Length: 357
Image (tube, rainbow, N blue to C red; front, side):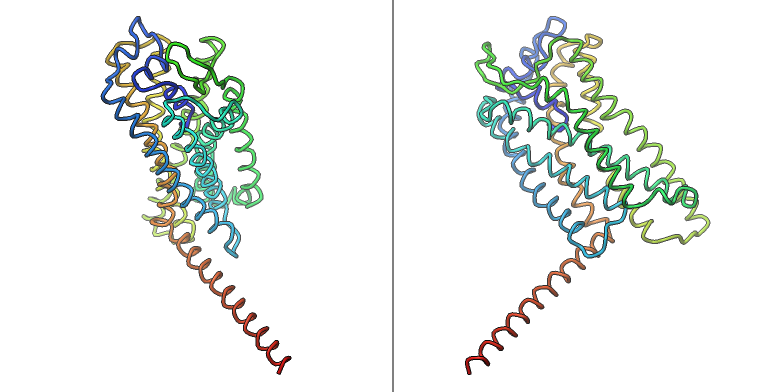
């Protein structure tokens, strides 16, 4: 799953997934609380959904990267951030087929320890990197619209590329627990050989979950919310004052706001459920009904988070007028190259014929 909770969730067949994921909470076993019909439906639904998201996500995000990277004009600062976001989404959807096969194989992990660690690191990196690329792009829009004159020098492509490189490194650092604690183990009581997070003790587990909530949700969402509020206020002021500004900046801002809204809709429910789940495992909350709700919502909201990786490229086309212009420009560029190649081929053939005549 996009945050590693999928790995905790999907470690056994559906009739015991709740018990294996959450264990005995307040004396109530998760499998006894779980709605087996719903879990069985989710079990059947998971592989098909993940493979569909993979096919669409790979196709759309590769297309976005090709447009940004192959266009003759260099990328703007915002486009550098969005291209890295597309790369993070591509990383996620590239890892999903392994989990689809795992679910289809009754949660017996068939790919070995190395891929158990690497695949889940890739999934976890998407969680951290995608949100921090949105932090960067929110800050960029904030500077562009709120502090246009005072900090304009900061908005340079070389600084944007450096920021993206640092975010990839930061995301890799935050996935260290996945690298350390991911193991392929035979779970005797459920007779599955699963790829699971095997924390040494409960304290380490709570710390890692707290790190996910803090660095994957609370801190970045706070920054994004602050910047978004200031951006909207600046747009309102400019509208009242009939400030023309650069149309390019306004178009880019519209696209960014759409991407931010899509991210919040897709990811906030997941992080809220993750936070509640941490409180349950810390025995702050409890109860059979809550356990049942978490078992189902954890999976459903994770699927919603997956969908964000497909939704972003669609938003680029629908909302991003500049992106559509780049697509048209790229097609014209390719058409000109094909025409030049064809003309060159015909010229060579004509020269060859004249030589033999």
